[in-house]
Length: 147
Figure 1 (cartoon, one colour):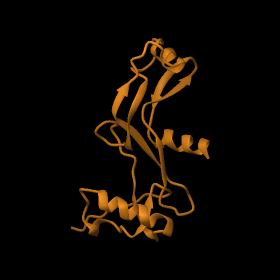
Figure 2 (figure 1 turned 90 degrees about the vertical axis):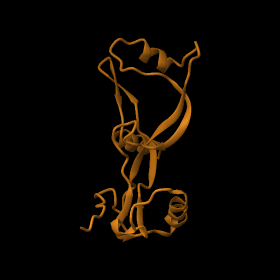
Figure 3 (figure 1 turned 180 degrees about the vertical axis):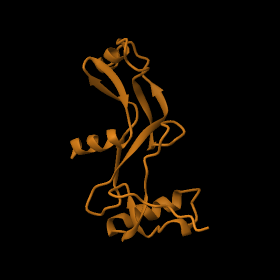
Figure 4 (figure 1 turned 30 degrees about the vertical axis):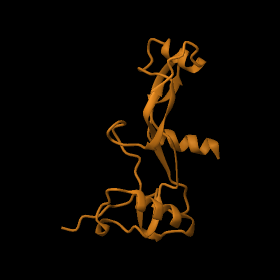
């Protein structure tokens, strides 16, 4: 059987900016008595999800081990790799310890996502209640707000 990865549209479209999601691992929590106001509001609200203010950590692509979903990413089946990606993709494969068989994807084509932004355990305030959100539904609007 020939198993291959099937990249999804529109994230593989070369005319769009594809946004991935990241998370923090090896996190340190802010245990200071002087929490930022956002932390004290969220921690002091009875209908808030369990939350803490994070003071440090290592940013990585979202993984099913923590977030329960992945950020997605891969290589286009049709669009060739643009020049501006070549150095980053070469470094990616040099550092990647475990690689799927090359028969499953075309590593010489356009890689995606183009950029990533924080996409786990974000806070949403709506009608006086606080919720946690995440995924590319969080990171894409965040990235759009930056640019």
